[in-house]
Image 1 (tube, rainbow, N blue to C red):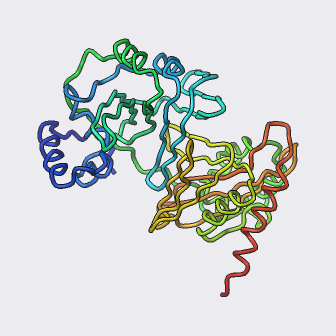
Image 2: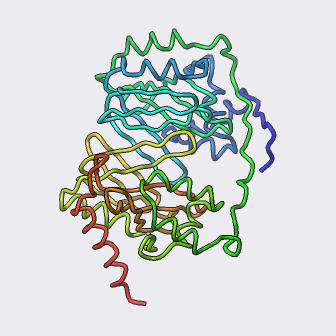
Image 3: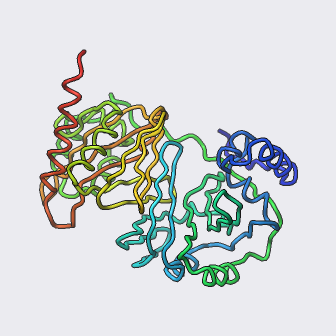
Length: 357
């Protein structure tokens, strides 16, 4: 994809969007943008001056005030997974281009250099008027959204918008697509013995990123080259199996999903697992997860040594080889992994072994 700006004429995009909405009133903005050949960010920006207000960046000060809104719904997604969590912002740390929100109910990792465009959005939905803050990267892809709930502080929301309203409210944005990722090392270029020995010698799960960088591997390459005791390939049905087992056994889990600008985490129980057509869903009161099962390509049970023992994850990759979701057992730093979670993963692996060839 060329690394040059692409510009949609906002009025033309908006008129085509309105025509599409007339035929399909409930079409979601992201789906409408795809049908129109635009990014979601471009479509939102085309409505500036009407139900959309452009916010001025950088957005650190705005993020720091989000606890004032009270209980909200946060949404982070990629092409395959939508992760929605209700809760309250708090315990926010912002340092350079990295931010952490470490509240019990809103748990985020922010990579702020990708937070390029921000908007306050008001839209009409079946339930009435919905208000939100929406942030997009330079390509117009959504990195994070914050939706008001009935119990949110609407007056504080109005004040936040007034304080961070951009002087420029003209419609439209110029987007700049990302170039192709640089290819990693080929299998023949990797010192396989050294890579596997260093994996076996890991002391902390966060050291894994350094291991990838050192050997010039992307995540999926690394799993394919790892010893099976550390990375066991699974069918994509492992997602439903793991969620159903976690619900039935009441095993608390951590569900990670995100994109280049934000990782969102749910920690706790899941209960209402509802597969529907091509979607795997968790539909709980405070946590919703939606996964396009037809976009999943592969899954792995991944084990990393640490000073607290092995830490086990289930990792899921889509048809583009993108890491789209990850499941862990709930674990506090300095504590060993839950035996209930470990048994759950072993049982998911056993189901793979039971599938006839």
